[in-house]
Image (cartoon, rainbow, N blue to C red; front, side, top):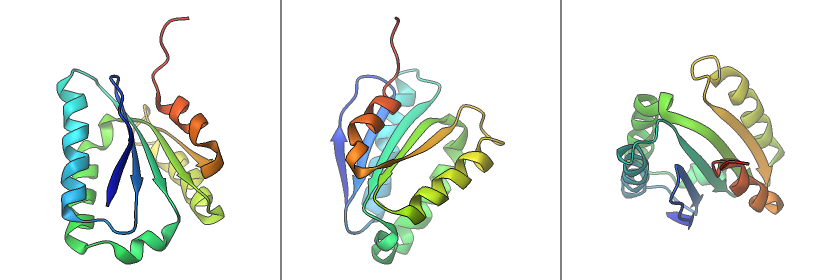
Length: 131
């Protein structure tokens, strides 16, 4: 199940993955993302809060596949990506991913935040205005 943590007028989406992930959840994310693209944004910033990798046990295969296929198709349109969790393993994955994925999308910047740093993660994905 996906919970939208906060709604943004700008090109950011903040989501929390709770318990299981279904095809309906994948479609919901696609709709949110497409809405931002339809508003004319070149890149969409995403925050995903997840407890740990145990959520993988509860993913529906069809939802997972749908989400992955869509992600590959729209990969170049992802900007800043914040992963919020409380897992050293997840932190390691994010650090490796950031270095590898930037080779294929220079706009992508992925960072790990501990769940106690949610406010910092929200600031990271929120576009800076003027200043």
